[in-house]
Image (cartoon, rainbow, N blue to C red; front, side, top):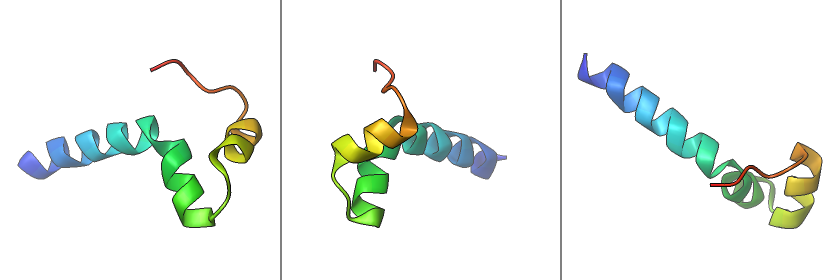
Length: 43
C-alpha cells in the first residue's frame, strides 16, 4: 500500500521538474526543452 503512495509522489515530483530532468538527461539547455514542450506551467 505504501509503495503506491511513493509512486504517486515520485510521479508528481518528476512532472513538476520535467524540464530540469529532461535537460540533464538529454544534455540540452532548459530553454530549448521548454520551447519543445510548449508553454511552461506556472508553479
